[in-house]
Amino acid sequence: MIISDPLRIAIEEFSRFPGIGRKTAQRLVLHLLRSHQEDFDRFIESLTNIKLKLHYCSRCFNITEHELCEICSSTKRDDKIICVVEEINDVIAIEKSNEFQGVYHVLGGVLSPLNGVTHEDLKIEELMVRVENNPVQEIILALNPDTEGEATSLHIYKLLKDREIRVTRLARGIPIGGDLEFADEATIGRAVLNRVEL
Image (tube, rainbow, N blue to C red):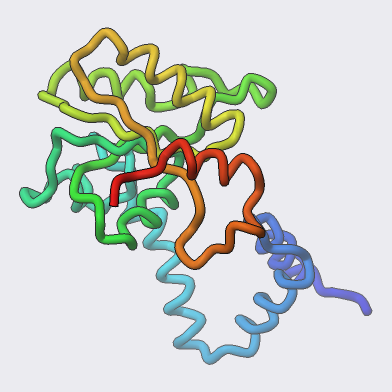
């Protein structure tokens, strides 16, 4: 089947999204093609607004429509506790738990020398400025427990270790509803090390 250029180009653009393969991209494009004009227009407007109205918070680098995001500008949040995360997706995930009442700092990635990501490519200096200019009591390192996440956590810890700031990391272990027999050794080991009082 010969595919027209507009269809082919749209499929190629959709397939550039993370986790979207060519078949899924094709289904999405065909769905848009079949949709009513007002639905299509609303979709296009929502995409345009992403670029026109959203930018990064000047303090924490979360997404916002204003100078500061809703979390940084909230008087109900404890700005003495900063949770350091890799990406904005992590802020969304933690916020869904409704357990954290501090503020965030989005690094925009993790250290990865093999991929050319260094200290200067991340928002680490901006974190240090926040710590310097504000009475921060605790930094929570909520980075992924992989090699790059661990290296980044260690790097930040070394930068903060001479300051009177509590540096913590998220507890790791068996997920709620999980079975011990299906957990890997590293996860079980972390769960044992991070055990808590009942």
